[in-house]
Image (cartoon, rainbow, N blue to C red; front, side, top):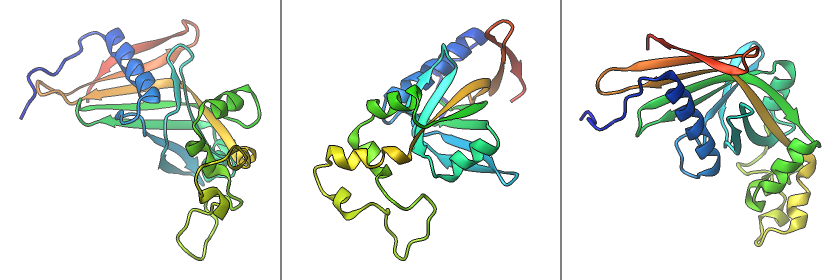
Length: 206
């Protein structure tokens, strides 16, 4: 049943502000539709997709951040090709976002330290495992040491995983937004213009 109350945007600047506002909110809000977006890299010449947890977003810097095991395939992919893509879908609002940008890997610098220190022990203890992601196992398990699986999680448990932690930051240079509105679908495309230090937008056919 069409939602007659669904807002319809007619101004490109409003769309851009709306998209960034939602992305920033997602980085701080569990359960937000964009909290767990799809992150895409290139692996052996083909797209490689996975779900990540958006941890930080800053419209002013055009940045998105999540954390990962530095031994993972996605980190290797970024080292080989730093161009990446993000995708999010908001079922309730009927909005899709597609973002393209350049990713950087942060291991022991200020970016990594800041993200590490802002996270909860439960989200960091997963790094305290000797086998790298993708390693074969004899049984279906998470690879964590038995001591790490006990409660409560100790500082030592968390600290053991710091050596494997990586912060992944993307600087966005292209954005697309699609709205499946009951009065008609419509779509906006934005490209960052370095000389103007701003995004330039246009309406495009959905």
